[in-house]
Image 1 (cartoon, rainbow, N blue to C red):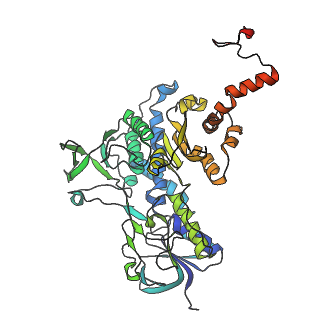
Image 2 (cartoon, helix red, strand yellow):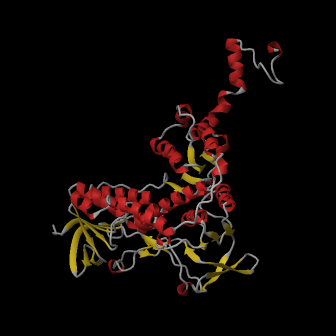
Image 3 (cartoon, rainbow, N blue to C red):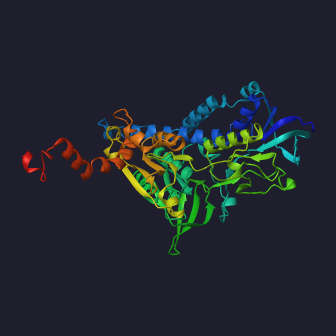
Length: 490
């Protein structure tokens, strides 16, 4: 057997790479982790999930400070936001979490961490800072970067991406956002609440295009109430730098051009896989900006070289990257043939209200040609939501023709947390009757899960046939009040 420096080598210290490294080392595999950035944690920790949710919370608190009259409190006018302080808080939160993703912690687990730009020299060996390092198996988990669209003038115009937006020296007075996906919409609301005048430009006629139109439109309406302006069905013709402002020319469906101006420009038009410079072409591993091509066990064309996380495209979520890291671990370390299964992937867009989903929504069910029914409940009928002043939104439960759940979408307060009950339902095979019969504390937002499940059974339980049977067996006299009350009961 050939001798290698390591049992397993991992390129990329984000969610997928860290999951594999931690598990492999603790299982006794001699493990190397190579990261090109200055610290571990990946895009999520430094430029994505953590800073964005920290910023969203800060914006929410500032928004609440100005919303006193809604809660019977005096009106307040807080001073303008000092974004340097906001950025400092973001850095402090990252610093705390960074300790969990530190070199010292992974060294204690048994992982050797190296920093630099690795490149494959053959299918078992990388070149790193002039050294050759070999491993029996490799995992490529290099993540993704903001996609740079081919827009006229963009290469000459200063713009922001998720790598810069959280670390500005000051809050831009105005902001144009290109794109209307989750990151774009989250940032639009957050910066709008902090005081920026925000305009969102979207080529299609719907924001959050992967979501059902009815729920996406409710998110849009909320942001519009807060002052965000939307330019939908608008193609970007060109952008330009005016010094203190950025200029964006858009064309509507009628072919008419309009010019928009703002102090800052945020480009949020998708992601590109980080595959350049790895030497994958030398190994004949298929890869492009959309990602590395892998099979259902996350193997490349070389069965001992795996890829996971954003670098393979698909569901670009941190929790999915962690899941894929677990699949790689089972295949590469345990040598158990496990395939990925994305049928129960949950996700959430952290606007207010939040929009969370698992399984199929109506748009995907129709595309798949699946017959379904929809059961829905409104947060306006949830006592806790009313008390909290967050009664907008609804839950949608999709059932197939056998009344088995296909998917759940929740638009409302803390929707991501509420979805966790449905994660257990879908993954644990829990019947809807169990949810309907379970005791949920009152008053909680979680009661909406029980209510939508109970609504499915209510027509059967309170049917005329059941009433007729109970009357036959127990001589019930029927209604005591109402237009249709029994004559005997009057």
